[in-house]
Amino acid sequence: MSENTPMVNVHVNINVPASCLQAVVSNWKKKSAEAGQDRQQLDTADTLAELISRFLLEKNFEAYTRDESNYIPAGIGTEAL
Image 1 (spheres, helix red, strand yellow):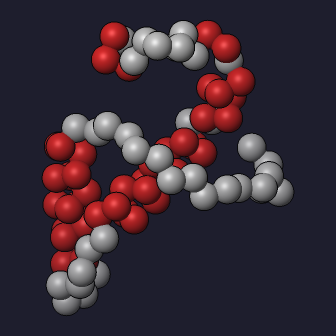
Image 2 (cartoon, one colour; image 1 turned 45 degrees about the horizontal axis):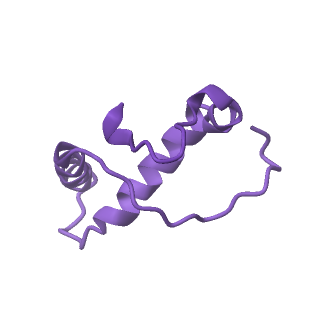
Image 3 (tube, rainbow, N blue to C red; image 1 turned 90 degrees about the vertical axis):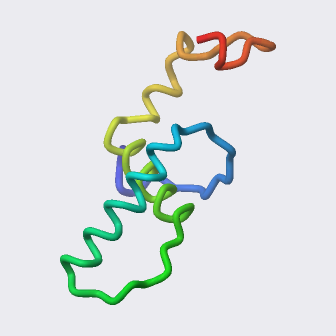
């Protein structure tokens, strides 16, 4: 993806394992301690959003969205996968 590609901020609800949130909190605490920072308030949602956004960019989510085979027919939820 080009650096000149316009980006939009999209608010969505996604399902992630609870272990993902535990990892975010645990790793954030470790990084803060390593940096010598006092305990600061962690915004788990913002941190998770940043991680997911970076992952989507690095893994070329744009190409994934262009591939029609990745789309589930209407009425079939992801629980069927």
